[in-house]
Image (cartoon, rainbow, N blue to C red; front, top):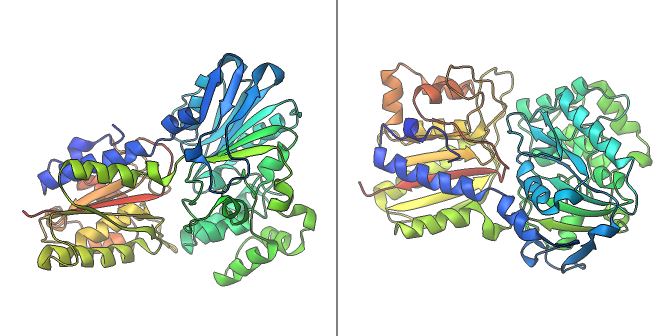
Length: 488
């Protein structure tokens, strides 16, 4: 089980509905595990390694097919990368490569258990990087200094890597990067895409520079997303879209520029409050500091695979589980990208219309949504996360609708930066589940939900209401929201 406190969150309110929604959420979270797909990508027969699977290729990949590597002809095999849950991919590599694996280094998020034996794991902070992120990058750079054309390198990248893979350019301190991240993402609620355009241009590893470091070697770049559909960048694309429109998979070429970074600072009106070192670097850096573009990247020796295709997505798994239970299941959106509380208000208005009038869908019904919601906290010091804020706002919206249950979680198991300090609770909740009874339960405990939402202080409240979800960490495929409207 990835949901570690299922009994706690299903023993009150709409118990039957909560149990169903938790079962569906567990199904979704189990599907968000790249290990089994990584096993499908690789096959070893004696001293030959075969890498490839049509399922994980981007459309129109000019190198389509299976690559064969004669292991006795390779000097070293390394595995490097960063992201939430990347060890699950590397675990498959360790098992397949066995004694042929020379080593490597991955930067994982604090809290991820170490499951690897030959690949070094450095734990770093997310969403605001820490010194360990730099240490991990230093380890990767040391490996890069040793590689030759006789080596094979696997790079792994997924959500969370833009924080974990942090090595600031000379003249920019870690504190400067932390301040930038806090201003843009925490205070202003900037999207990951917008923030990455800036981060890519003040870092020695991001924007394809990781792959440039290993360009002497043969490389297999593994990204934990659909090869034709970036988890964060929502438009569908083919191989050339993957190569030419990317700004967040740092083992692939980057599509942003210094001028775009400066424009984004202006967009959020932060050009005069970010650290001066960053502003100056963006304005004066030479062309040599530009990120890696496809024109350069295509000359490297590489293959690229996206090992979490939409056909293996958590939506598919949940829809199949709902079908087993003879409950209609519909996807509302995969591109939810707005303030979490606003998302809750809009979606719950639709849900209440279904419950009251049977339009636009009849009950019983299960509704799914995903994306990357936002929370702009400004100067609030509250502890919470976007899925928790969505759920708590939903509790307010569906008050009295006892046949509605709403659950929302970050598929990586950690929703927000954390900071919850209650005995027996995790430091960071993974999400929350609420129903039409929740607001009444809060009133009994004299908890002012409106005030908590206003201050973005949702974690403590949800835990005390037995609505906060404790989830085992893994990769992130963005948010997953499951809503059940029953006949009862």
